[in-house]
Image 1 (cartoon, one colour):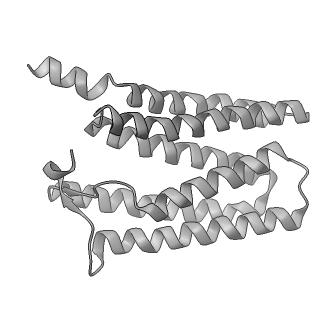
Image 2 (cartoon, one colour):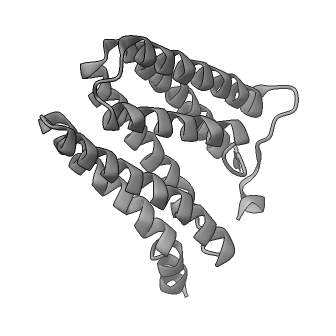
Length: 194
């Protein structure tokens, strides 16, 4: 019985898609850091676009076919955040204006990790990502992929993208603080989330 539950928990299509996203990070990093032509930047951007597409699909598959698992609830956000961090680190090397965005991402995700651990130790967790978190992830991916695909964007456009990303990250950060510790907390007992 334990083996059946273990297999159901781990061997799911959404989990494999999240694992694919994690494995695509070094491919993207290599393609981006060695890119010298527009074609090579487009190749790096396409790897990211495919990663984003699998991110959109895995959640839908999990919900539609009842493949939601505790492993998937951990693996999916880890794949998202690792991809965002790798993307921002690579782009910050070319566009230093993105370093504050990277710093804000690290602070926000560090807070969320600590809050998640504290909630978990108390038998609680968020039932899923907040809507603003999903919007923030989408904005980050779209804007940063644009920077990959169009490496010759004017500095003012890059500055605007950095400002927009920082604003969405900041708003998302505040909303997650409220979700964990605010007056109307959104954390629930873990057993009620699956």
